[in-house]
Image (cartoon, rainbow, N blue to C red):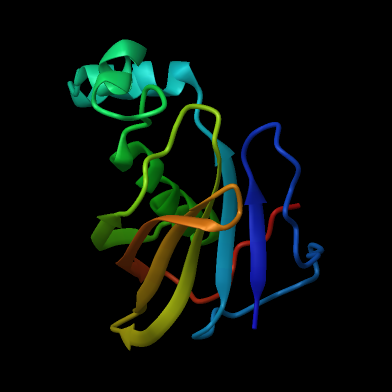
Length: 163
């Protein structure tokens, strides 16, 4: 089983397996690909602008605290954007087909988020591969904050290697 971590921030890497340019891995059911990320206030502001989601729960600490949160929330869809990033960075040219999500707990600015996709079903579809993934995000390495499934059309099952 492949377990591969990507790193996208100044947080310590969770590299669980080493790869070299000579390493070739073909995706199999059970393989897990991960990415670590912490969202910043700037990320939330930029996402608000792009999505036109100006809900004050994301930008106003007082508004968020008035309804029982610790502070401004990171948009759930911004957190879930980890999943297509993981897939596309490992399979350039992948087409994201579908995503289901359940948001279980809030994510706050600065929380360390570990996003992971786990291959659950792979089948050939013409000259590509239809891949089903279990998708999850964990806060601080243990609390499940997002749970779901994704389907992507992959150009290959060969996992792209970072040099």
